[in-house]
Image (cartoon, rainbow, N blue to C red; front, side, top):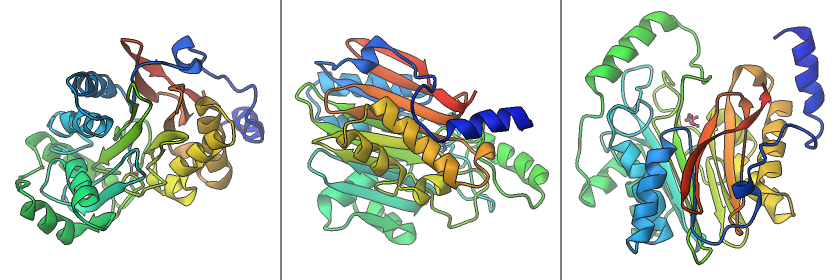
Length: 321
Ligand code: SD4
């Protein structure tokens, strides 16, 4: 990064005010009906489906589960569920979590062979006394509960992996603008109840066994039905180190708008993560009134916003523009 740009971005880290907020009417005003927010462009399809689930009488928890299931089931989306990008040894290992309006949560990490980890996470939440299952234990639990064992590696993900493996040549995995599109969703029903979900194959070429932020309650996702909900995408290590999503919700509790809260936590992460210019981290958030916000380190982060009958892809503001 050139010196001037570095100076400008570093000086912006100190304060949260005056930094290019995307002002959309639908986002800054309270919304009466349901509101659904999801990360990245794939969120548009997920939101449409999630909205249908709500309209056909599903709960807000069904909405955030089924909405992201749809993306997990698409083999052409290379970073979640079937077709998800493998780790450095060529295994597809998935992380996911879900949280509802009663402060209940469920999570699975390092789960292989099951294309809908978020649904396994929901089973953990609803059918056990635990919050999180990992690896073989999570797989066995899923099989016992009727999930089907599948090959998640597709011809395309295998070919992409071979290419990356040849290029990587001992370098660490990167999460930059291309290497992610985890889907995270937060939603509020017409009664004002909140839920959220997050699902991913994680950082491409990660070390076998690595778990990111997406299944960690408070990092990749957090919901407090009295206050709001937030979820994260990007370089999970930086999000975990700062308890990202919980912090966004905490700022909303203390009176900040979802937009300001996302912005402040992205800036905090940037202040504390040495190599912040080389990573992407983005948050989406909503408050109990249905106001929404998002912010990212790098430009290029978009999210899907469904409210007042409209489902739109919105470009997030970013620290580095
Ligand atoms: C991870 N946060 O495993 C995930 C990856 C991601 O957009 O969000 N990519 O670190």
